[in-house]
Length: 71
Image (tube, rainbow, N blue to C red; front, side, top):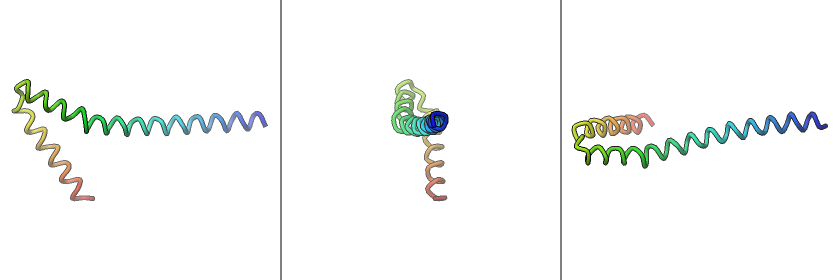
């Protein structure tokens, strides 16, 4: 019984680790696109890099438009 309990505990531990990594990756993507990307773009505008900011915004807009069109 102890061996079965140990094996089951190890399996549950690894499944919980996989779930934690997937959840953390999802949260990281959300934070990156909702908070970090706008801050970077605003910083680029204040630094005088507007020439690079508009193409980035255009590419992001194109990608989101194409994603919505395919869904």
